[in-house]
Length: 241
Image 1 (cartoon, rainbow, N blue to C red):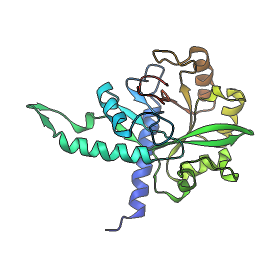
Image 2: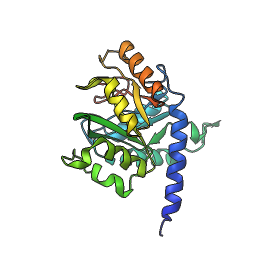
Image 3: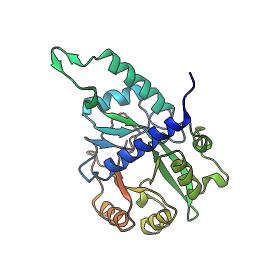
């Protein structure tokens, strides 16, 4: 059965609009128990199987989350398939108590792409994009490109052409200052910046206070959305490593 491309595009646009509304509610307390939009699996450089990540998301009680493997949506696809199977195996009524499927954590498509911004290597997160859109295919091959496609403006445009949202990951972690990078990315039309991030990797995750204030202020000043995520690479979604 053929799929109407226009219908797929409409659904993707609606998804991005919904996620934009969710990002508008994110604050320093959102992560890691309600929202988590930056996590990795064994499909890039993480230690969690995608299926185990979803199990943790459910047990933690996450509301919205995204798997953002580097240059890959394999982990997202595996997690999505596992979640659909989980829903089938757990009907709406469990032991006589009503359980709405809508209460399960909502998984969004995601990816982390290496790009060049102001001649500096940065990471750009993509969310809610159509994973089959032609514009995204050069960036979903499991490796960082080394040609002109790495230019931040091209990466941002590719994500947005696929009806997704582009976000500058951990802006205070690069060789150039957050002020320079966020201003440049905003001029290129980026949608948001990862404002709430644990740069110092504490045992119990929490946004780094000083850098959070800086990035939050810069994002607001440039009219950008503010996101959060643990950048999990280890076995727990509640910390970075």
